[in-house]
Length: 114
Length: 113
Image 1 (tube, one colour):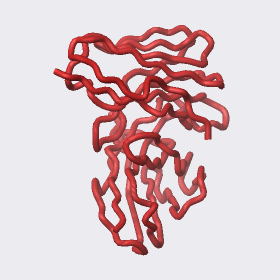
Image 2 (cartoon, one colour):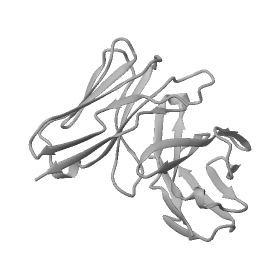
Image 3 (cartoon, rainbow over the protein chains, first blue to last red):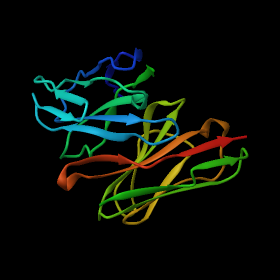
């Protein structure tokens, strides 16, 4: 099935640095999501974006819903060791017969060196 | 608030044995429910989804089946496990009537020997 193009695939950064990752799609979505997954656990929803152009923050995290509805980015400012994990973007179209099925990116593995 | 529970957390099974993984959701009614498999910590693959009791849609042909005997219960099963069924299985729920995105359980690590 379709996958979103998420980049970068991995990042190795120093504690305190800012992080930026993005997702692009060939299709339009009316909702974009960002999840974080710690080893051995399920993905946890970080930010949900429901409107094109929307910019939403959650603590040190900021995400934007691209105005074309085909892309989104996530920024993490002043990274800390507990930011380590895999970050996934996902898109879906609420309503109709999509049943909320998500299309996922391949994930970005983030490593933070103290 | 809503919570989702999956069990067991880990499972080691021999090839050819049956499987039953259970997922339950609390604090909501008529959720959409989903089963995913994740290999090697990347890439979630949707296996099944359900929009109501007894309604199951399969996304990929495979050795597994799903059932929804109650509104907030979703079960993943197999009659005879294969080595290739090893992986990390995740259950998720969403509430589309309120445009709630999917929330995931903690997963089951399944190892086939």
